[in-house]
Length: 348
Image (cartoon, rainbow, N blue to C red; front, side):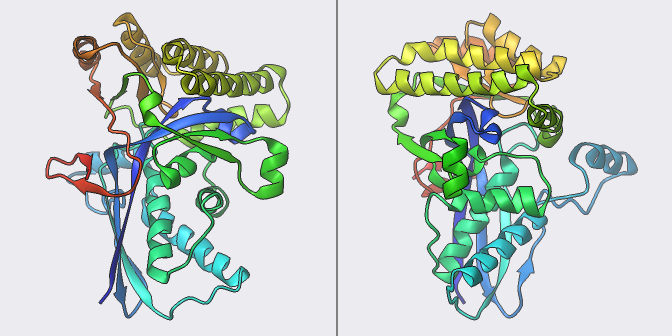
């Protein structure tokens, strides 16, 4: 009985987001502190086992109401099914013969829910990695993130962009260019791997109680972009410029310039999105502690730069006063990671 395993990790949108959904440019990194561990075990029938985000048991009526208000009615199984469907369709469309066997899919996830660290797309990308291993199929590296995107966007109707799926398939630190003409011609963007060693000291901080469905934040702005409202169109171009400047600064050894670009990214986002006061407070507390700060995704978690260990301790203490947990991201460059008993991922 064959068992295939795959992993994907949490990600932080470092610069340029959310322009990945608007033909812009972004830079992101995958970090091994949180992730998804997925296995496919050969079985007589195809089966998808519920995971932690497929809640079916509750301790009280109050918990049921609370969880459904925040997390909705949908969990991880729909992600597994959607990716599987598109994977099999891809094989059929490209004349790829796959072994006649079924699997039981199971996953474990420790990514904090709905705080902008991309747990849902980690489920999707881990499933695609596992399917390719299980059926011995190679999907071109540049196109694999697109298949994950189509599973969420087209099959499930989730508002999302390319960035998360790219970084979770590539790992490490990646600069992404989603030029419209290139994207429409090829079905994927231009992706450039950068060495994580180029980065200054980075931190992640998140509020475990700030769960919010990210698609809601994007829906209104997407509509305004499609209507070509000048300030929104201009902002997406500016986001892309910020990412490009960050990439250029890193590759030429000017890492000290990253802090100002991180702050500029959030300031621009704040000018076009209806940023909640709770999310804005996270950024302001970090900045008052001397760090740079922006959203790691769509709210609930922030990413930024700090100076040294003593600065990190002061920053962590300030953010803990408003209920945030702060960590140093272990940027992961491949899927070979060890799951520790304390629930933290570590490079092996």
